[in-house]
Every structure is written in C-alpha cells, then in structure tokens.
Length: 267
Image (cartoon, rainbow, N blue to C red; front, side, top):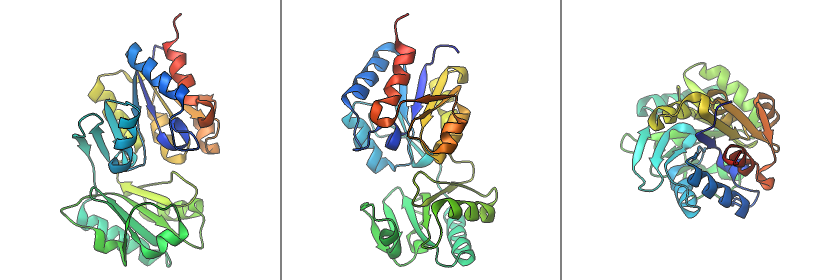
C-alpha cells in the first residue's frame, strides 16, 4: 500500500482509552504524525460541544468531524466547514412516524444548541450527559437550531434489535446506526462517517489510496469501507473486526498509535 497521508480515527473506544483520555503514548504518536506530515482527523459521534474542547486539549488540529458526519469544524478556530442537518419538517415527521410505529420508543434530539431528551431516556441510558429534559422530542425540533442527530432507546428492545426495526421502517430515508450497545442513532439520508471521510479526502486533496480509518463500533463501518485501509482496534465490535483489513491493539494498548507508527517509521 502507498504511504498513508490521512488517518481518520474514532474517539471513544478507539483513540481514547477506557478512562476517556489520550494516553501519553498516543499523545506522542499524534505529535510524531504532525511532524511527519501525516494528518490525524477525529471522526466521532460526539457533538461539537463535547469533541472540540477534547481535541484542543490534546493539540489535535485540522478538521474535526462530529455527530457521525453531520458537522465538520476547524479544530483550531471552531469555524464550521460542513453542516448536514435534518430538514425541520422532515425531522418532525420522522419522529412522529417512528414513535407511532414503535410503541414505547423514547427519543432525543441533538442540535447545534444542545441535547434534548425525553424524560425516560436518562432513566434507560444513565450516562449523565448534560441535557434538557423535554416531554416530547418533537418540541425540541426548531428551524432556527438545526437537528444533526436523533437518538432512540426502548425498554423492551436491545439496541441491536431496535436498530434493525428502525432501519426496516426508515428504508433509505435515514441512516440508522449505533455507537454503543445502549441506544440507536439516526442521521439524515446520506450522512455518515464514510460520507464525511469522502468529503475530507476532497477537502485535504489526499488520494483515497493513501487514507486509513480506524474504529470500534458499527457507526464506524462506513468510514472503514471508504478508506484505503480499514482498521479496527482489538476491543472493537465483532462486525467491525470482521470488516477490517487490519486489527490493531486495543484502545487501552494504544492501537491508533501503533497505526501511526506503522506509517511514520523511518525505513
């Protein structure tokens, strides 16, 4: 394979260790990549408000892809480079249809302004995210604050089963995925990490053959498939390991750092 010029990496469970931090070894590897002219871009399901302070803390510069590809910002300035939110009218229709078809479905809305969760969501997924409780997700959908992602959970269905059900209902109108085993995420049609990576390739003028992507969960699969080299950390979901061309050490064993060193080692 040609020398890689761009590595796209997921954050949680991939670049970050189990404490949610970048290890000293990974920090050193990112600095090595920068010195070698190898771009390392974080592509995460997290919203900008969570991901941007984190990447700045560790000195990650260049583009930052958030909300599963819906928003791309410049990590240094915070300027929005790409925004692909839901149409407000369509978003209300989607929430109404899905909750009508799946009794007991609890949903939330992630917009530029914040996270709005129906009150039962935090009981079913007690992650402690900063959010505003709402009686209905529909009330949080506003034209002046575009929705970039929807989240859904059900007390009687696993995330895997809920994803299958919602994907069947949505058809090709939505992108339905998950980044944890607890809930399901929905993006507008055509918006995923793979599409975002294709945008990055054009934005950074890097040949696809000279790109690599690494992740751990099903929402990373489009990115792995879009890259010249798709890699998974050892702790990845079985579907991700099966799809990967290369399996790296786990996130707690600096798997992304190992990938960086693979392409920055002096021959």
